[in-house]
Length: 147
Image (cartoon, rainbow, N blue to C red; front, side, top):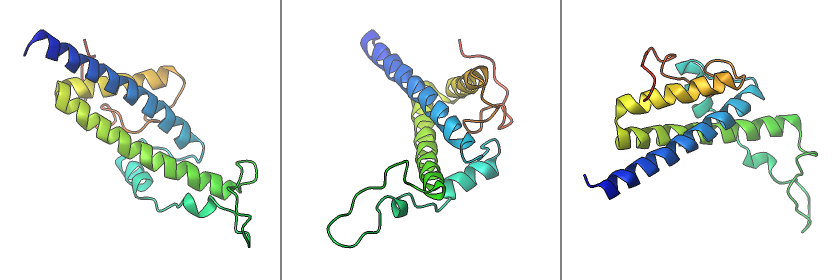
């Protein structure tokens, strides 16, 4: 592989790592709001397979032509929770897609090390272990830190 393509590959991998860090932080915040722990396979599957419909709360039911979106302040707590779970589900799917692409770029071992490093970074920020979803250690994988 030539130097230019190696640089492009490392730049893309670096961008994916940044995306992964941002996704995990947002996932951790969303999971704590409706108190949805994501530290087990079962909890992750439940979050991804949930059937909450954010769209059902998105428009006020008014007669006539005066149909406006509901403001966040006027939305019921149930609608906000459904919306948060809907976003959480989408972010989890996006994160798993990002992890897959990262593994394709740099290999499974290095991507697992990065995923574990991102999880540890969340813990240093004050989130509970596994708050952003399962990390390598939680999945039964113990890896040395990424160089």
